[in-house]
Image 1 (tube, rainbow, N blue to C red):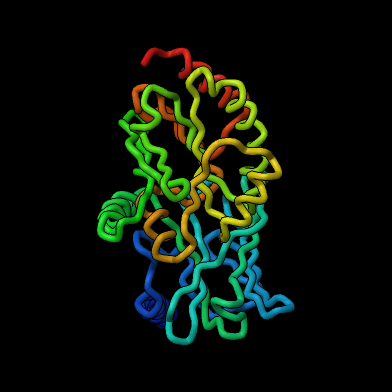
Image 2: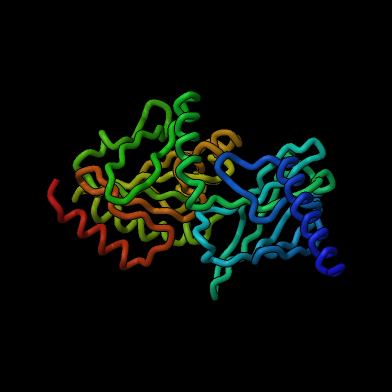
Length: 298
């Protein structure tokens, strides 16, 4: 009985400690903690997530994260570091890959945002299926109030009405592409699968633009220059909308669209209905579906 009482007390203290930690460190809109923020240690494992954190030569805070690829309805993952005032700073995903059901990715925090020596704690947030609806509604309202252009939340089988500015004075919208099959490619230069599929999209665009295929890129790089280097190197001819890098805009985008991980490809048919939403895709799968949609009447 004494042992059971001791275990019960320990569990109570653990739960109370978790609650205090969650109260101290606020979640991003619509997200929840998978790994509650704790002070940085070189190696940590919790709830199937393994992290190795370290400081680079310029005092840059980096985290290597290993996690299950299939993870109980998780729609997105991000790492947040906190300073001594409890302000959150989101790390940027860098190189990564997956094999055998495990995803491995390196994340880094820009030194100008927060140095490694000033990181008080960091945690891992996830966006789950159950939280998407509330986050989407709240973020869409914020987008309207702030005048932020975002893609709508993708629901296959529903009309997909969008409007994005790709450069000053030029917008691409569901109205301007009416009657066409629209392929929306969400990508970034740091996402190797994103860059690997760009030659395929180039081939589709060059071969089917006259048949009614329109391609629109939505880029999540850390700077327009990073995006433009890839656009120039691969001779990409379709327009690309760059998502502003400030935290408010990125938070609104992620929460309103549910687009948390890259690559992501959306396919809209000639009638303006979303017909496919790919987070992973095979080359022949995309080619077949594009051909099928192009053969359909308006």
